[in-house]
Amino acid sequence: MTSDDIPRPGPQRAMRADVRRNRARLLAAAREMFERDGAGASLEAVARLAGVGIGTLYRHFPTRQDLLEALLADVYDGLAATGRELLVSPAPGEALTTWLRAFIVRITAFPGMAAAAAVSLRPEQPGRPEPSGARRAVRDAGEALFRRAQDAGDVPADAEFADALRLAGAIAMVTERDPEAADRLLALAAAGLAPGKGAHGG
Image (cartoon, rainbow, N blue to C red; front, side, top):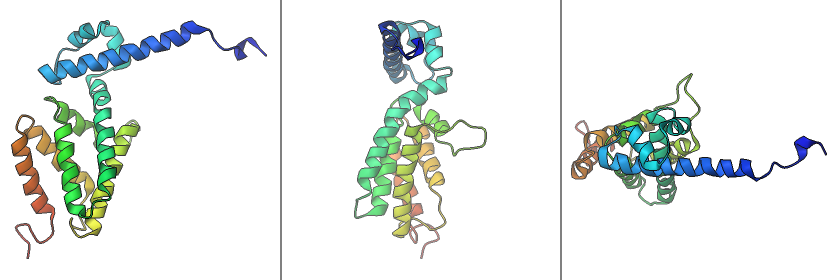
């Protein structure tokens, strides 16, 4: 056995635990600050609330978008789980609308969150980093519901899931403080998606 094979002693493990704790504190502080002041809240104030220096914040989250995406990860995981549950619904079109409504509600937890989600969930492009597991999961779950609704004739055959997601994101951005308006706009959008029910329907 060489010296490289010998397990390292406790200090390195303790340091990793400190890193995890700092990250958790930063996320909790960011959530609190953003819910109070919106996604544009001072990052220095976030670091102070977490009890760490601003350098520590930037080591964990090099940009504000990185911090927002870390907060969105839990939202995406929840939406992916909701999507999987809705896949057994006997009404595919209603299941899709239910999921889109949940999407709008959950990405409007604080002002600016919807805009961050719109950036996060853009279709992959050359040169962009690989999407996180949470981002892939939420898109896969939503697209599965969309395709199922399409197969049932509840969504036009030539419609694209990416456009439905953009539409839901746009509704979220313009109704962050007005959930009733979000419901009305989503209902209007859903009526437009359903074949034969729009302005040019039979």
